Every structure is written in C-alpha cells, then in structure tokens.
Image (tube, rainbow, N blue to C red; front, side, top):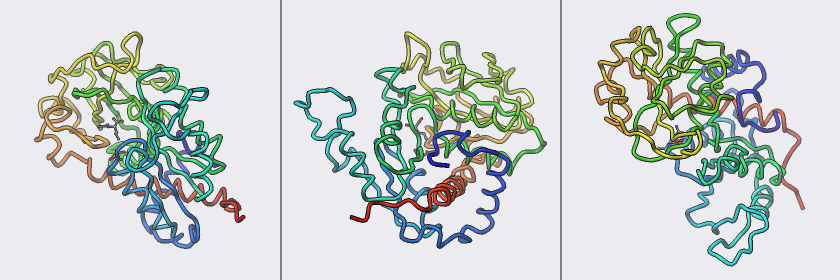
Length: 325
Ligand code: AN0
Ligand code: CP
C-alpha cells in the first residue's frame, strides 16, 4: 500500500479487520517498526480525535510525529496553479508540499471540501497534489470526499457490537447549522457496502449523495420506515451534493434530530456518530447518553484504525526515507 485514501487501498477487508483486532489486543507488538521514522500530520482544518488518535497510533509504533496546522503559524498557501500571487497568500502548495516531504517519511493530510467548486472537491485537488509532489506515502485524515480512518474505525466498532452476522445499518441525515462536507457519509457508505452489510440511507429530499458512493444501498425518504429493524443508527449531517445547491444547507428541520422516539422504532439499535456532535440538533441528550450509544468506543477505535494503516504504510514503504543529503 503506497497511499491510503479509500477502502480499496486495504485490499481484503476481512484481513484488514483481523489485523486491526490483533493490534487492539497488543498495540505494542510492533513498537520498533517506526524507529527513526517521522510522521508529519498536516491539518488544513480543525481536529480533536484525528490528531490525538493518529499521533497515539504512531507513538505505539515507535514513530516520531510532527503536526503542522496550516492556518495557525504557517504561511498562507495558494493552491491554484497559474495564479498571480499578489494577494495574501505567501507560498504556493507546489513548493510547500515537496519541502514538507523533505522532513518526514509519511504524511497524513486533512483537507475538507471547500464547497467553491464540486469539480475541485470531487477531484480531490489538494490530496492529489500531496500524493504527486511530496515524494512520500500519503494517507487521508479526511479529505474532500472521504474520511477512511473514520469509516475503518466505524466498521471495527460494528464488528464488535453486531448482534447478527449481517446487521441492518441505517445512516440518517440530521440537522446542523453549518454546511458540512459529504466525506463522512460518502466514506461510511463505501465501507459498509464493501463489508456487504444491509445499508439504508435516509434523508430529506434534496440531500441525495453522489450515486457512486450510495452504490447498492437503499435510499428511503421516510425516516420511520428506514429505522424499522435497524441494528445500528449512524447519524450525520451533510450539505447538499446535487446541483444547483452543492454545499448548501437546505434544511434545519429538527424533526430529523435522532431522539428516543425514533430509536424506539429500531431493533434496539446502537447509536453511532463520528463526533464532534451538536447535541439536540443531531441527537438528543437522552439518546447519546443512553447505554445503546457507542460513540466513545467508536472514537477509541480511531487509534486502532490509524495504527493498522500506519503499520501497513511503514511495512510496504520500509526502504523509503527522506533524502540524506
Ligand atoms: C467535520 C465533517 O462533518 O466532515 C468533521 C467530522 C469528523 N465536522 C465538522 O466540521 C463539525
Ligand atoms: N471524527 C473525527 O475525525 O473527529 P475530529 O474532527 O475531531 O478529528
């Protein structure tokens, strides 16, 4: 595995899950693998879980980590080629990326959809530039269209809690005051489809996701119907994907907040969310605090998904390193 940006990079998903469970049993089994290796984590957007869990995973493997928050202290970066740089951006990504590559062995990147252009976002412009120009293996810590470390942790969690071999998983849109990317729902759908589980996606009309991610999942506009028989309820807000409303908030309808009455329609489902979550917008206090809420074990599994991916990247690219001159 040279880079990690989506579920397909892992190859056999069952094998990857087995590896994750072995790591969870003994997270210090490969404590020397990352000796003298440096991970650079580059954040264009905020993070709590991703930065801590990925850093912890790297430490478990004996790596050093460096964190760059691009918007706090680094030069403002231009991302478009051909721009006359007479504005507030002091440096171009095309120099910044190879320079970053000089100081590290692996790069983790967080760069959300900007919602300025669907083509740019869905072309993963920033992620692709890091892959092309850094000279280093790159992994996504949430890019414009996917959040694979989150989805991997979600799937690990589902494996741990599933009451049947093939659970019914329901992903529900829920209201939020800001326009949020589709990366988490896209990715979740991609991974649950890859796992072969029944997936129902429910949302108000106008919130249809890219069909490439929906795949064989069933879309059900009636949330009550969707929740019937669910083993897992995965809540998430996302902004509209379809034209002409790409990146817009179309509804803040709190009837879509996941509350106890909605959960009562399920087969005693577990409640999941990637966090950070806005209480009483996405989910009621009662549901997130209930014994069926598994948001904290889900977040804990971020360390495991990150460590599995880092371990594979280190193993596959063992001969690589920054230039010695
Ligand atoms: C981000 C999102 O929805 O993609 C990160 C989630 C992991 N959420 C917010 O910006 C609130
Ligand atoms: N779930 C997740 O990625 O959280 P952060 O944005 O805090 O990293």
